[in-house]
Length: 78
Image 1 (cartoon, one colour):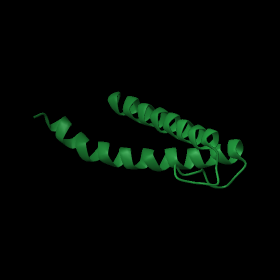
Image 2: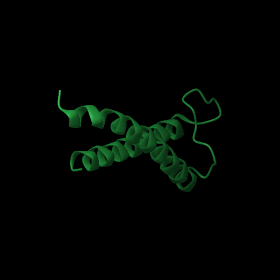
Image 3: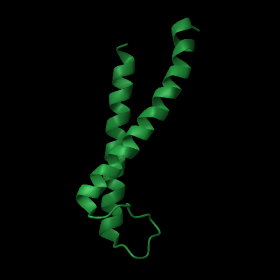
């Protein structure tokens, strides 16, 4: 195995953790703007509508996928 692949594993894991935190913060800010509420709904939240829960899940998935792709792309070119 190449030394660069071995060296990238811990860096990749650290970048993954940081990107997860960044994506979580971005989702919280986006939900505050869109959802008119501090906290996004959970899937089992009985006080929220299906539409609101599914919108939050779709937005969260899109943000996490975008951040992951950006971090992976940046890591591929370094």
